[in-house]
Amino acid sequence: MKSKAFNRCKAYLYLLPSILVLTVFTLYPLVKAFLMSFQEDYSIIDGSFDGINLANYMDLFSDDVFLKSLANTSLYVVFVVPVSILLSLVLAVLINDTVRARPVFQTIYFLPYVTSVIAIGIVWSWIFNSNYGLLNYILSLFGIEAIPWLNDPHYALPALIIFSIWKSLAFNILIFLAGLQSISPDIYQAARIDSTPRARVFFKITVPQLRPILVYAFLMGLINAFKVYNEVFSLFQGDAGPANSAITVVYYIYDKFYNSNDYGVASAAAVVLFVIILALTMIQRFVTRDKEAA
Image (cartoon, rainbow, N blue to C red; front, top):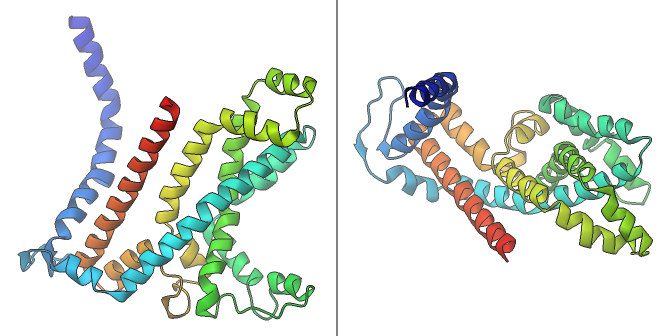
């Protein structure tokens, strides 16, 4: 009994640094933001406030900019997450089949993941440039007129979505390749002996074998998509697109907290975002668990 108690104490001592970091930088800000969201006219200087009520939430949901950021973030999630996962899976399968050149392609596709988002955003801002951008040059070869990607409110969000899909490919391709290489070659060998069509092999063997990784990729993509900020900041050079056309919820929180000094509304927006992500994560895990049980 003493030995078990001693080992338990040792385990807690080993975990103590991580628990302290988690408490100071994650749990405390979460609780603090939740409390601030109910404190009217909160002052960050002395911590004073006028009262505890729902004024911040009422101001939040009556703000057209927040509603726009919520709509933009939802559209961003709907397009970026499924498209990036689908493209990543297809590319991973193609790279996995290219046995000799696999390490080269792995390195090429992984480079965006380890490159600064700001640097990548600057490059893509040149690609989207209305006058000399590479994308408009390619479109001109097909007779399409130049599109003001970053200057027109109608095209700012699509430009952000295109950029984010490309950026998210790196991580997904990496984990899909790891999953593909863990599948037993005997399964594919049996399929080749039976002359199974490649499409049937993909949908009946590859996809089911990768289901846990697909669920993980979808969940991480969902969470990261709702937290998008760096991509907006880098692509539009600190702004949220013309007339806030590409503003997202996290950018709204940042703008309210640091630029407008409206700490209560910013905290309320952060709590709403947390609830949305938590609800979607729980729903996704519940649906996945039911499918696995079936």
